[in-house]
Amino acid sequence: RPVCKTFSSARGRCFEVKVFVSIQWKPPDFDKRLARYPEVLAEMHRKIGSGAGALIESGVKRDITEKGLVNTGRLRSSVRWRIQDPKTTVVEAATKYAEYQDVGAGPSRAAPGPRKRFWPPRDAIEYWVKRKGIHKKMGVSLSRATYLVQRAIWRRGIKPKFFMKGGLERSWNKVQRLVREVQKDILRRLGFE
Image 1: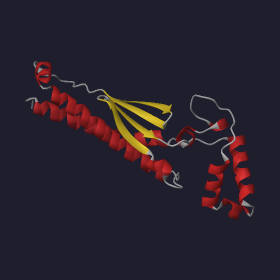
Image 2 (image 1 turned 60 degrees about the vertical axis):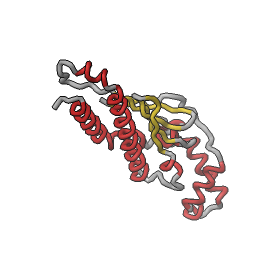
Image 3 (image 1 turned 120 degrees about the vertical axis):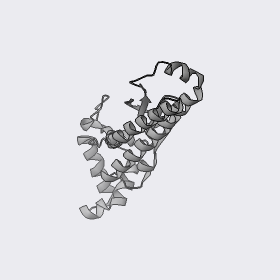
Protein backbone atom coordinates (compact mmCIF):
# COMPACT_ATOMS: atom_id res chain seq x y z
CA ARG A 1 0.00 0.00 0.00
CA PRO A 2 1.55 3.39 -0.94
CA VAL A 3 1.91 5.95 1.84
CA CYS A 4 2.69 9.56 1.09
CA LYS A 5 4.30 12.40 3.02
CA THR A 6 4.80 15.98 1.81
CA PHE A 7 7.83 18.04 2.77
CA SER A 8 10.00 20.89 1.57
CA SER A 9 13.69 20.50 1.00
CA ALA A 10 16.50 22.69 -0.22
CA ARG A 11 15.72 21.37 -3.71
CA GLY A 12 12.05 22.37 -3.71
CA ARG A 13 8.64 20.87 -2.90
CA CYS A 14 8.65 17.09 -2.44
CA PHE A 15 6.50 14.05 -1.98
CA GLU A 16 8.07 11.04 -0.38
CA VAL A 17 6.21 7.92 -1.45
CA LYS A 18 6.81 4.82 0.63
CA VAL A 19 5.37 1.59 -0.61
CA PHE A 20 4.39 -1.08 1.89
CA VAL A 21 3.16 -4.18 0.18
CA SER A 22 1.11 -6.51 2.29
CA ILE A 23 -0.20 -9.68 0.74
CA GLN A 24 -3.50 -10.52 2.39
CA TRP A 25 -3.47 -14.21 1.65
CA LYS A 26 -0.14 -15.95 2.17
CA PRO A 27 0.27 -19.58 1.21
CA PRO A 28 1.87 -21.70 3.97
CA ASP A 29 5.45 -21.60 2.61
CA PHE A 30 5.33 -18.09 1.08
CA ASP A 31 7.98 -16.52 3.34
CA LYS A 32 10.31 -19.49 2.84
CA ARG A 33 10.06 -19.27 -0.95
CA LEU A 34 10.49 -15.49 -0.93
CA ALA A 35 13.64 -15.82 1.21
CA ARG A 36 15.12 -18.11 -1.47
CA TYR A 37 14.53 -15.49 -4.17
CA PRO A 38 15.65 -12.09 -2.78
CA GLU A 39 15.98 -10.76 -6.32
CA VAL A 40 12.19 -11.13 -6.72
CA LEU A 41 11.63 -8.85 -3.73
CA ALA A 42 14.20 -6.33 -5.01
CA GLU A 43 12.56 -6.33 -8.45
CA MET A 44 9.14 -5.79 -6.85
CA HIS A 45 10.41 -2.70 -4.99
CA ARG A 46 12.06 -1.38 -8.16
CA LYS A 47 8.95 -1.89 -10.32
CA ILE A 48 6.64 -0.27 -7.78
CA GLY A 49 9.04 2.58 -6.98
CA SER A 50 9.78 3.52 -10.57
CA GLY A 51 6.20 2.95 -11.71
CA ALA A 52 4.68 5.00 -8.88
CA GLY A 53 7.27 7.75 -9.39
CA ALA A 54 6.54 8.02 -13.11
CA LEU A 55 2.76 7.97 -12.58
CA ILE A 56 2.84 10.66 -9.88
CA GLU A 57 5.30 12.82 -11.86
CA SER A 58 2.95 12.69 -14.83
CA GLY A 59 -0.04 13.57 -12.64
CA VAL A 60 1.75 16.55 -11.07
CA LYS A 61 2.86 17.90 -14.45
CA ARG A 62 -0.67 17.56 -15.78
CA ASP A 63 -2.08 19.34 -12.73
CA ILE A 64 0.40 22.21 -13.18
CA THR A 65 -0.70 22.58 -16.81
CA GLU A 66 -4.44 22.40 -16.07
CA LYS A 67 -4.18 24.96 -13.25
CA GLY A 68 -2.54 27.42 -15.64
CA LEU A 69 0.78 27.58 -13.79
CA VAL A 70 2.90 27.39 -16.93
CA ASN A 71 4.68 30.58 -17.88
CA THR A 72 8.22 29.59 -18.83
CA GLY A 73 7.77 25.85 -18.25
CA ARG A 74 10.50 25.73 -15.57
CA LEU A 75 8.16 24.62 -12.77
CA ARG A 76 6.63 21.82 -14.81
CA SER A 77 9.95 20.61 -16.19
CA SER A 78 11.50 20.62 -12.70
CA VAL A 79 9.13 17.86 -11.54
CA ARG A 80 11.14 14.64 -11.31
CA TRP A 81 11.07 11.38 -9.42
CA ARG A 82 13.97 9.41 -7.97
CA ILE A 83 14.33 6.26 -5.95
CA GLN A 84 15.83 7.23 -2.60
CA ASP A 85 16.08 3.70 -1.20
CA PRO A 86 14.41 0.39 -2.13
CA LYS A 87 11.15 1.33 -0.38
CA THR A 88 11.09 5.10 -0.95
CA THR A 89 10.45 7.10 -4.10
CA VAL A 90 10.64 10.89 -3.98
CA VAL A 91 8.72 13.10 -6.42
CA GLU A 92 9.91 16.69 -6.29
CA ALA A 93 9.40 20.05 -7.96
CA ALA A 94 12.90 21.48 -7.77
CA THR A 95 12.57 25.21 -8.35
CA LYS A 96 13.03 27.96 -5.79
CA TYR A 97 9.40 29.04 -6.08
CA ALA A 98 7.72 25.60 -6.20
CA GLU A 99 6.76 25.69 -2.54
CA TYR A 100 5.23 29.18 -2.86
CA GLN A 101 3.09 28.06 -5.79
CA ASP A 102 2.10 24.78 -4.14
CA VAL A 103 1.20 25.80 -0.57
CA GLY A 104 1.12 29.57 -0.92
CA ALA A 105 3.12 32.25 0.86
CA GLY A 106 2.61 35.09 3.26
CA PRO A 107 -0.88 35.61 4.70
CA SER A 108 -2.37 33.09 2.22
CA ARG A 109 0.00 30.21 3.15
CA ALA A 110 -1.90 26.93 3.64
CA ALA A 111 0.94 24.83 5.09
CA PRO A 112 2.64 24.78 8.48
CA GLY A 113 5.36 27.35 8.66
CA PRO A 114 5.73 31.08 8.78
CA ARG A 115 2.95 33.21 7.36
CA LYS A 116 5.13 36.29 7.47
CA ARG A 117 4.81 38.81 4.70
CA PHE A 118 7.69 38.96 2.28
CA TRP A 119 8.75 41.22 -0.54
CA PRO A 120 9.26 39.04 -3.65
CA PRO A 121 12.44 39.44 -5.73
CA ARG A 122 12.16 42.23 -8.28
CA ASP A 123 13.89 40.39 -11.15
CA ALA A 124 11.58 37.37 -11.01
CA ILE A 125 8.42 39.47 -10.76
CA GLU A 126 9.55 41.85 -13.51
CA TYR A 127 10.25 38.92 -15.83
CA TRP A 128 6.78 37.49 -15.11
CA VAL A 129 5.04 40.86 -15.61
CA LYS A 130 6.87 41.36 -18.90
CA ARG A 131 6.08 37.85 -20.23
CA LYS A 132 2.40 38.20 -19.33
CA GLY A 133 2.19 41.75 -20.70
CA ILE A 134 0.59 42.97 -17.48
CA HIS A 135 2.14 46.42 -17.71
CA LYS A 136 0.57 46.93 -21.15
CA LYS A 137 -2.85 45.76 -19.95
CA MET A 138 -2.61 48.15 -16.99
CA GLY A 139 -1.31 51.00 -19.12
CA VAL A 140 1.66 51.66 -16.83
CA SER A 141 5.41 51.28 -17.10
CA LEU A 142 7.08 47.91 -16.56
CA SER A 143 8.71 49.24 -13.41
CA ARG A 144 5.39 50.48 -11.98
CA ALA A 145 3.54 47.24 -12.79
CA THR A 146 6.35 45.21 -11.20
CA TYR A 147 6.11 47.29 -8.02
CA LEU A 148 2.31 46.91 -7.89
CA VAL A 149 2.54 43.11 -8.21
CA GLN A 150 5.25 42.97 -5.54
CA ARG A 151 3.11 45.09 -3.22
CA ALA A 152 0.05 42.88 -3.83
CA ILE A 153 2.07 39.77 -2.97
CA TRP A 154 3.41 41.48 0.15
CA ARG A 155 -0.11 42.45 1.26
CA ARG A 156 -2.12 39.36 0.26
CA GLY A 157 0.48 36.65 -0.21
CA ILE A 158 0.31 33.94 -2.86
CA LYS A 159 -2.72 31.66 -2.82
CA PRO A 160 -1.93 27.93 -2.70
CA LYS A 161 -2.41 25.90 -5.89
CA PHE A 162 -1.86 22.41 -4.38
CA PHE A 163 -0.48 20.97 -7.63
CA MET A 164 1.57 18.30 -5.79
CA LYS A 165 -1.47 17.01 -3.91
CA GLY A 166 -3.63 17.30 -7.03
CA GLY A 167 -1.13 15.32 -9.08
CA LEU A 168 -0.94 12.62 -6.43
CA GLU A 169 -4.73 12.35 -6.20
CA ARG A 170 -4.97 12.24 -9.99
CA SER A 171 -2.60 9.27 -10.20
CA TRP A 172 -3.45 7.46 -6.94
CA ASN A 173 -5.78 4.83 -8.45
CA LYS A 174 -3.17 4.01 -11.10
CA VAL A 175 -0.51 3.59 -8.40
CA GLN A 176 -2.76 1.24 -6.43
CA ARG A 177 -3.50 -0.75 -9.60
CA LEU A 178 0.24 -1.02 -10.28
CA VAL A 179 0.87 -2.34 -6.75
CA ARG A 180 -1.84 -5.01 -7.18
CA GLU A 181 -0.40 -6.09 -10.56
CA VAL A 182 3.10 -6.41 -9.13
CA GLN A 183 1.76 -8.40 -6.16
CA LYS A 184 0.03 -10.85 -8.52
CA ASP A 185 3.21 -11.14 -10.59
CA ILE A 186 5.27 -11.93 -7.48
CA LEU A 187 2.84 -14.65 -6.39
CA ARG A 188 2.91 -16.14 -9.90
CA ARG A 189 6.71 -16.10 -10.08
CA LEU A 190 6.99 -17.82 -6.69
CA GLY A 191 4.74 -20.59 -7.93
CA PHE A 192 1.44 -19.60 -6.33
CA GLU A 193 -1.45 -19.30 -8.81
